[in-house]
Image 1 (cartoon, helix red, strand yellow):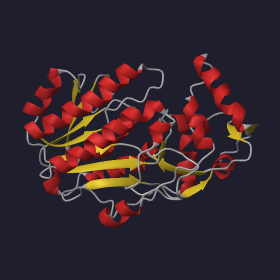
Image 2 (cartoon, rainbow, N blue to C red):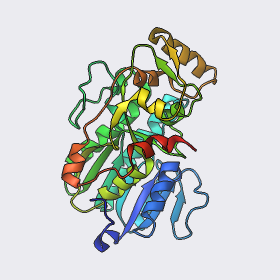
Image 3 (cartoon, rainbow, N blue to C red):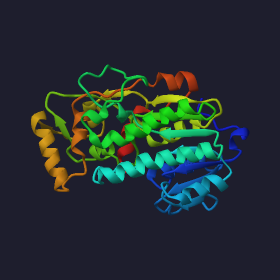
Length: 315
C-alpha cells in the first residue's frame, strides 16, 4: 500500500540530490513532515520550506562530502541527473556518471542505510523488436539509437553494480515510464503540449504515462525498510498515442516517417524546436514495460487515473 512512513523510518535525514528541479520540489513537498530533508543541488531552491536544509553545491565537489559526513543521514534519494540534449557529451558524462559515483561512495563511507536511484524506463529504448511488456531483466538498449541516453544507462548500471557490491545497503533503482505533470518540461510533456503534434503516418505506438505525484509516491515508498531491488514503475495503464492525443483534443500533423527524423534534426539544430530528434523513435515504436514486480513485491500502485494523468500536461 502507498501509506506513510512509520515513525522508525523518520529517524535520520534523507538527502535528495536534484531537489531544485520541478520533480524534486514535488518530492520535497510530499516528504515534508515525514522526514528531515537535506537538499543538494547546484541550483537555488526558491520558496523552499524554512525547515528544509538546503546546500547549493555540485555533487562532484568535495564540499558535497561534508554534507554526508556531518548530515546525520539515513537515506539518499539520487535524482540529480542531468537531462539536457543541448549540453556537451563531456559535461553530461562528468556530472551524471562521476557525480553518481561520488555520492554512492559517500553512502558507503558514512554508513547510509538506504539508497534510492531514480532511473527511467527510457533505458530500454523504443524498438521494432521490443516485446509487448519489458521486464526489469530486459537489456538496456536505448543507447543504440539515442546516444544522449548513454549516461543514464551508465548511471543505472553503476547503481546495479553498487547493489551487488554492497548488500548491507538497501539499494532501490526505480525506472518510471514517461513522467508528465503541470510543471514537468521533459520531451514527452513538451510534445503533448504542442498545438499540432507530429504523428508518423502508419504508426500508432502504445504509450505509458505516469503522473509526477505518483513518481514521488514511488520514491517515498522505496524508502521503507526492507525494500530493495530494480523496479519498473508504471502509471494507470497504457494506450495508443492516438487515444492520448484525442483525449487532449489535439489536431495532429501526419508526417512520413522517412522525413520525420531529418526534419526534427534540422528544427532542433536551428533552435526552432526543443524536441530531441531521437525522441521520434517513440512516435514509431513501442517501449512499454511491465510494472507488476513493484506492485507485487512492494504493494505500490499509481493513484492518479488515466484521464488525470493524460491531462496533467495541461498547465
